[in-house]
Length: 239
Image (cartoon, rainbow, N blue to C red; front, side, top):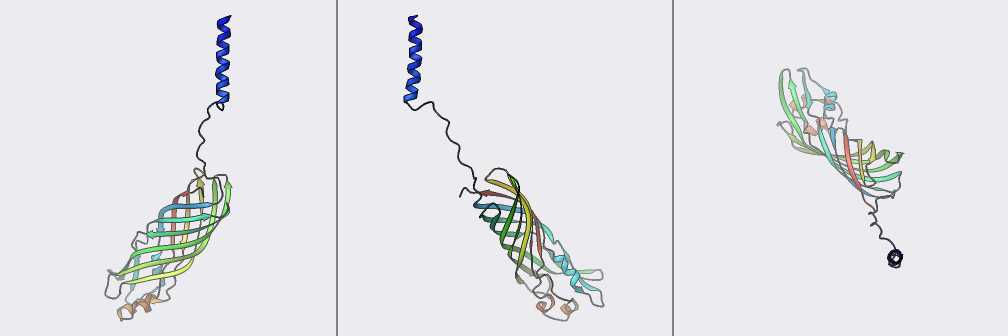
């Protein structure tokens, strides 16, 4: 009997000591996740780009010798980065930068003979967008964006008829896409974005090239629209 009494007393004393010390130990709190609708996000984007330099063919007026132009390699890989800010769960602003790695080449043909004319050595796109979002589920949004874009191309001459020249065009840019929230901080998605250029150079008579007319008078400031079909991955900060 005495032994049981001592055992019960020791157990009660242990519980009292824990109670006076502040109770049972607690598990450490997990780091907070992004739960706010506002915040800064940054991301990477990459996919297929069509620079649409092949549209130049539809503007050609060939001469009597069946002399015209053709374009190759207008499509390829494009990618870049972007940064944005969510003002609310429905509205954001975003800045994008993209580099198009394909190098479209324009060639002239006369019957069976082909001669390279120029190559688009590099093409880049910059865009500033307003973004409207529509939450579909708790972790999936659809969005549309519109803003102003700048397309910049460096043209490298491959024929004495042409000269190296840089082309830059400000115009409207727009797109649509969807975002999937893998976690509150990590976002994956897919999108289509068009950067509008200067797509209508006018009526091009390529015989003018042979007659010494300056290329500026032949193609003007021609800069075709560029379309990027891409996937992206972003991180949203807890701020």
